[in-house]
Image 1 (cartoon, one colour):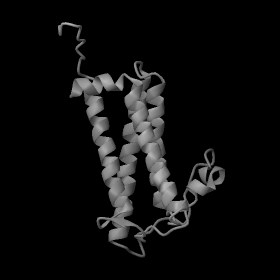
Image 2 (spheres, rainbow, N blue to C red):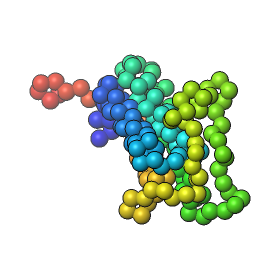
Image 3 (tube, helix red, strand yellow):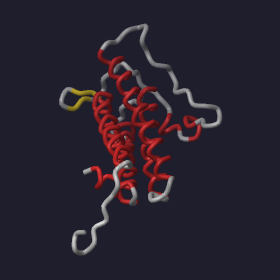
Length: 176
């Protein structure tokens, strides 16, 4: 399996699949916001940014997967997945244990050189409350699902990194 993951990491298909998966999840989030009229909170916006990081990692890896650039993509991937897990877990704890002392900010804080909330307000402006559970599926709220989604991205990322230390066997027509 590790040899297979090593071969996949050196081709564009797997990287593009990862970017497409993150893009689909972003489109689902925008569907929830603009069609179902659910209000995203600050933590939701930050979790979206982590998904954009995973999508960016997939695109960076797809540029030149057989070169050193894939290692940079893996770093972006792991960082984004880790931050996604951390944010989704914190968001879950705010929802499960609401407290007037543990709340989220009123607006997302982006760096002055990257004011995403000014550039794309329909995607990056928070209008909801972090403690509100406005959507559930099988009794799990959206941040609880995102803990699993980001955990899956992290698991695959760790396996792909481990696979980089496995030599791939080249097979010819006769299996040598």
